[in-house]
Image (cartoon, rainbow, N blue to C red; front, side, top):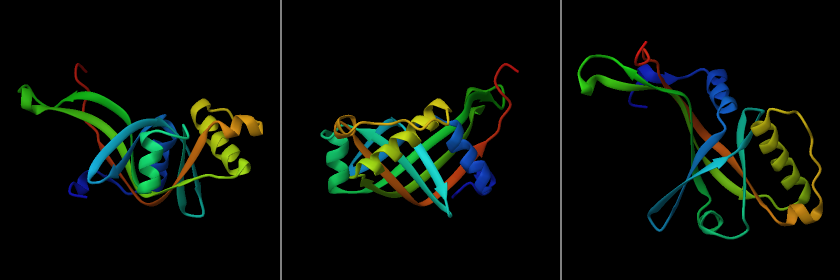
Length: 164
């Protein structure tokens, strides 16, 4: 990381950003062509391994790209706000906290894996610790993906907010 003064090294602080945000941007690539898509997500951090869960259609650009190249990147941000550091226009800045994660995506195959992934997404999005049941028909209509993270970093910039 170029700006070591902004790096978040504390694991709990990075996990807090992930837990508070609701949307991530998933970055994929195919034939040297990047593709970024905003998604709802769920996550799990167990035994030192971070995983993200997403869902989508069984066909389309996203799943086609994942099938050809499972390497992926996720960006998550929180606490974003316009901030002012000075009177000149070029002195304006933005306060933020963010996490960037790299890993590999797999398509979950079994009903049990898919239900677990969907429940992780629902718990994260709703804040409810509810275990939902899905019928085989419901599970057959959705693709559920898991991104196992190999590396993730955090970065923050805390500035005085504009107008304060």
